[in-house]
Image (cartoon, rainbow, N blue to C red; front, side, top):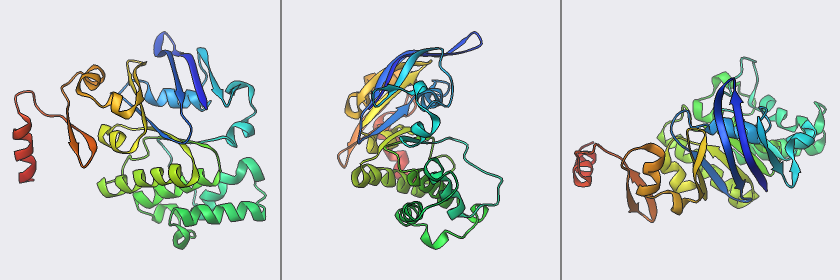
Length: 267
């Protein structure tokens, strides 16, 4: 389990994160949501030791993360940042190889190669393993970076806006893939995401942030309510149950839900 205890992060005189605490549940998807500037990515970076904290602690399986060596952290959690492009001329396989660096230090063993092969296969990239990254579509490239984190073979995977630059089809495929990783490989996934409907449909737990603080934290059904979401986004959000999923509908105050549905039917 990952525990974040009374965490604060200041940059200059500005408070970016202010005294937040939460626990990341194992074997589940936790989505961090909130408006721009809420501190979502900063919280993810602090939880993975990518940035220093001003106050508070992050515990990884009972040990304060700052007391662990880098390779110890890298064997327990993998992180994919929002900006994951590279100017290097790399093939898909070259990229996925990097996932084994905490173990191999660049000298791949047969065990490493087996894990790399499995990661490529799991992500449907075996036939593209010799293709250069700049020759891939956006969805294929994103899958390649996920394959790299999968090859790192960690219990925890942190993803910062993994749906960026993906169309609707590939976004759905990506979220379905994350659910498979939880179900089939017992991974624990933390995802920063803007689309609250993807959070509602695919996450198990939701952390809702605003102005550097956690306003709501719990199972998704306790967060995806009109009253709760208005606190986060300062707007009216109607909730409709569609095929058993809580779907957020946001529209102009002067329009009714029926108006919104009629307009949607014309698209």
